[in-house]
Image (cartoon, rainbow, N blue to C red; front, side, top):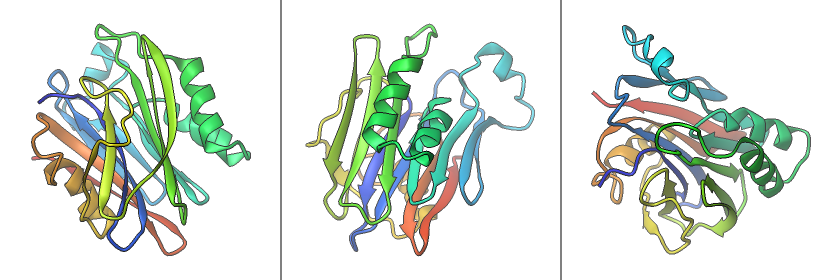
Length: 211
């Protein structure tokens, strides 16, 4: 099944919180993740830089760590949500206000904006989506060894019962899990992914490029 971009909140079997982002794309598959210690970008692969001129939404910072919080999204809302959290706004309020202000993407598909945020040591995490027909932001409990996700297409409502396994023990393994792991492998057209996983002192961040 093709669901487009995906954000997920997850917890390892030993209780560490994680957030993930995956690009699945049919129109612009020539993209990659560039991951740094506190941020990650979705960028065109070398030789495909001109794709940005065809669609302004295909390159953006998809992950940003601010203090003890990791934010992952499918667009420019990453920076805006993280900035509000950095100045003390609650995660729910930051996510809701930014998603409402930016609204869904005005492309040919009215692509929803999706976001996830996790805080180190917390027992709950946040998912958000703004579609043409509405806005949802929810704080959810994440069981150990499980992930909960939403996507831009088909699965773009928040369902706490939409649980799948999560067995990754590192950020690198987590990024791969969001492509090849149980519950994700059957979602088609994977391109690249990123995972922020709770570690000593905050979060570790890693990306995985398909092919």
